Length: 237
Image (cartoon, rainbow, N blue to C red; front, side):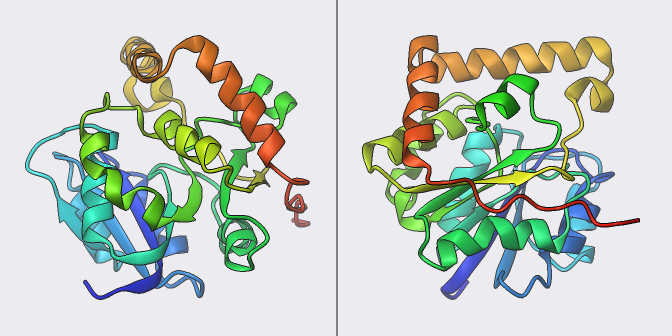
């Protein structure tokens, strides 16, 4: 792939039922030059749905987890700015993507992160979802570190990236996304399997960083954020 200005990276595992609505917004967005879906060993036709929606697809031979999928995507997607999106978002629209991209593209911030409408209440009260999967950053922050990413637990990517942002003192834009949500794992997989998946994700996070560092990350990232980007107003029905 030739170098582009903004590349959108979407890791996905068994999201055929949901990824289409994300790609309907990301593919063809005027600020996005290329969309790459990393199909992480799906068995439900996720790759076929993604190709039909106009995205390039990198198919992994087996499920290796989100962090490894992101590492592979970074190596395959040569761009100046990287937009990372989860594959199961609901309520996403072009305005939301523009709001996340523009603070970085205009030079108002070096990186940006979303605060979804259904983020846990404590994150909304704090004004920061420090493990949000929707981010904009220079590809150069992660491109030299793909081997380090592969050594992380399956869901260690967000807190690992937080470490980089804090070490580099990256000016952060926190972008409220009140109309955008992410379905719970319990809703997607059933109550028991969803709960186990949530516990596994938390275990991965705290295998990557201790709980005390999580608190320090939140405080540091809040200090690095200027005033939050303009809140997206709810449009009349």
